[in-house]
Amino acid sequence: MPSPEASTPPLAPGRALDHPGRDAIRLEGVLHALSDPMRLRVVRVLAEREATCSDVELPVSKSTCTHHFRVLREAGVISQVYRGTAKVNCLRRDDLDALFPGLLDSVLAAASEQDQRAGAP
Amino acid sequence: MPSPEASTPPLAPGRALDHPGRDAIRLEGVLHALSDPMRLRVVRVLAEREATCSDVELPVSKSTCTHHFRVLREAGVISQVYRGTAKVNCLRRDDLDALFPGLLDSVLAAASEQDQRAGAP
DNA sequence: CTCGTAGTACGCCATCTGTCAAACTACGAG
DNA sequence: CTCGTAGTTTGACAGATGGCGTACTACGAG
Image (cartoon, rainbow over the protein chains, first blue to last red):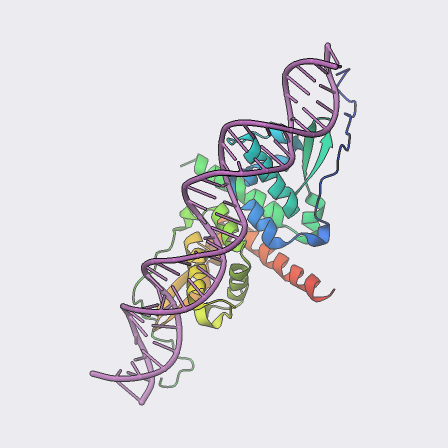
């Protein structure tokens, strides 16, 4: 890895994953995707920074992890692109905000607040 | 039924149902409850007016209907009180808005917009 | 070329979910 | 008291879901 900083990594498309178009994203599907604690945790991480599957720490096996990321992708919540051997995940903020204004933000805010309430008993 | 209009109906408590306290309402549970099309439909009706189970028209059997209302109640999304032989359902707007500000409104707005998009192809 | 790392694919399994029908309870009207 | 309406309970069932391990593929580093 020659001088990794500031250099755009390979970003090889390898093979494109199948993402639903903006118009194919359904509210019910998004809510369902967000209703799982593991997936909600993933989304909260991705709201702050993009991340590969493995640097979102989840207390589940690799295959289960793959499963959750796929559910999120198929629901239209995240996008995934290969970069070398890694896969980079991003929140599809633009699409979600366009389709369901305010929804993502209120879910994220609600999750944070719920955390805080739990943290201060 | 003597002059039914303007008279508060019996409103007999019959037997109180078990509702989670405000602090027991979990975001994941609420999102899960809202992620079913039938239940989302119920919530959208209740956002406009309170209603008995039977005057929310659902294309499912009575027992399935009972099931969905129970899921909503146990998730903390609605409250149910007996009034005579009927059961009146209300959105727990105050609790939801206090816990998850903006969430309910954005879900309702998103549902409406999704409807409109589907209605105008 | 070879190796290690990242992630996928495939079964398998237990549990949960949505659905129904049928039998039952609760209450108001007569 | 009797009847009809509203809703519950129970049991069944098919399908989805979340979880695992193992075997596999793909790519970058040496």
